Image (tube, rainbow, N blue to C red; front, side, top):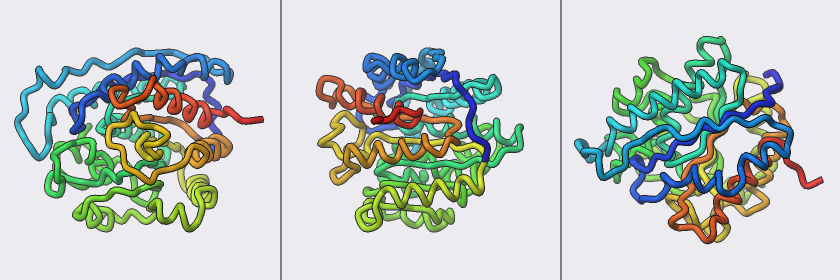
Length: 308
């Protein structure tokens, strides 16, 4: 894997809450901007371009047709716009920073990155930092919320409309995926993880026993040896809700402040990060925007900010 040389960051907002069961994450991109995202990146020496937000219809204007895949048509339509935008940003030599919005965003971001990698003959790797595996399908979902399905779709599991998004599948090889921080997995979702052949899966129990530093070091070592484009998808709900209350689906027992930053600092130190997305920031549930401020600091840590 080659070290990333990109010094121009392109911010892409994806104000999506159609994939979630709780309203409010559509305001996540605004919250992150208000928290000073651009200034933090510029202070690290990056040139920053803000592409604004991709237009997404609000829930009141979207007709519901399938309770097992809620708001599918609008999600696919807007994710296609996102995918094409991300691919173009990469083709232009910029670093795409996608800010959401619920985690259905990953349907579009991963597809766009994968399309770019196919054209450039690059091996794609993914670090998925999340309290949830998002490995449900329309057959296993208990809620019908599509933000619980993007990773399954990326590896080729689920409804063909999701799996064959952008007309190719899979988007990424299972052996090039690492999941870190899981602590809330649906019963049938566990079977999907096994069926997909995901081997590098680290729950919070693993973190407690092994330590986050050893886990992220192991993951990055594997990525360095096997992939050429590293994408990180960071769902803010992996962090304990006592630290970040403003997330879409809070689950107790998450990463501490320092554990979350250590993950991102380690990723920055490896020098191979090629694209990043932050999801599930929900200002409605937040306290004076502190979750968005925390998310901005995490992004800065992944882009090279250090204590000393």
